Length: 357
Figure 1: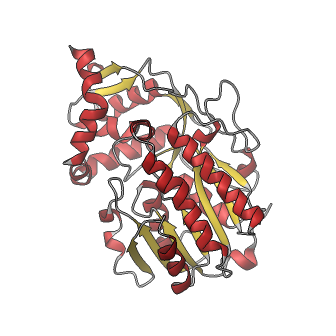
Figure 2: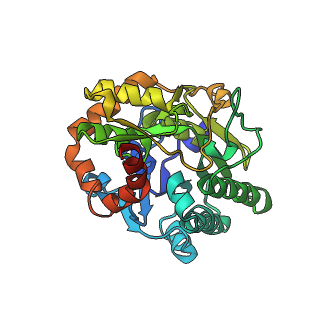
Figure 3: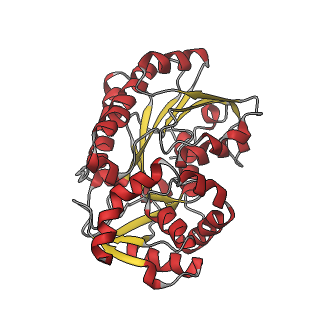
């Protein structure tokens, strides 16, 4: 497959949902920074409801860009989404908006149904009658494939979600493919492996452990720490998304975006301790989460065959990420205040006390 230059190279009018979240922030900043080889962005409408993980401070410095407009809205509001697509003459939709933390989905799955499933359907319905649309890109997760005992999951692998979060993403993927087939929406799906990098909310392993290590706080490592994840730097993931936007894909087609960098959580933890200069006794082995998938491994050879490849090794990317959190303490200290402390106590308080007691 090669890039559809005549269509892709026209200036884009983008609607980016979940734009103030971790991956959406990186994609939005890349869009307005004009990546080499990427088309010009004529207009970018950034949508985010600014729930706990959406942080407008991530985008605040973009407000002076005449191409940029921020809208605080719920993607499940079908009327609002349809209005934005029409009023802004959007021709590309990239949907990052999602509840994304497995632990939170185990505690309460209802927000995941609302945003990840109903919100995706709302966007699809808005796109269904919006004929100038060139592409609808649904950003999904390798977690829909479930635990992979051996080898790597290709795009043809069945979805076997283990958590409510993964189930909600698998359902959303199915609706995207159904709207592509039934309603001719020009939609494709990408499934990425575990992202890490700047601006990640510190409920996920790497930013949680990095910021806790800087503060000399315990690192709550689930179980034996040998759960394996395929790690991709967020900037490499977003470059994969730009690449997919330029491919002449079939409606409903799926592309895996992974770095083929499979590392056990224990080894990630040890690397973080080395990079932060903290002692190993900060690590606390705590009770595992229910249904914790043992191994994720994503086969991204299909996308690589079209010319995309990640730029950063995991060691390089992790070192750069730790450096970013070291240099941006004010950002994460602000995030780890207020309601975050209540969440942290709810998720880890009893686990840590049972280990330390």
